[in-house]
Image 1 (spheres, one colour):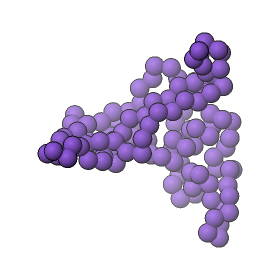
Image 2: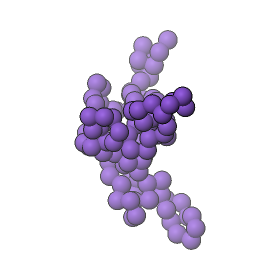
Image 3: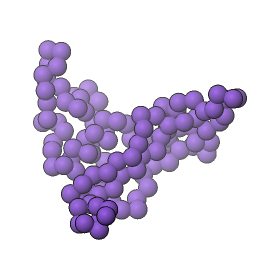
Image 4: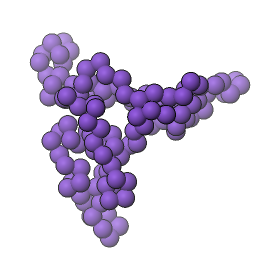
Length: 116
């Protein structure tokens, strides 16, 4: 049975993604190369909005152009959905306290549009 039928979806975060997208054009017989400028991510449960699409790419699908999200913003949002403050969750690394979002450097922000 799936998580929704068992009433577990709201206490579970399901994420389907990769670390990069694919270029929208074929590169001969080698297929399509990695694309760090645009990728797809699917999330469900855990307090995320249902049926919501966030952002868009240019007409060719090469680069994100609207509501662009970086990995630090995604991490900040995931931590917020778990009830954790990404600016306070730190570990010592390379002589300084750092976090998953490295907020002091990246200025990571929570993507409130994704949350209910």
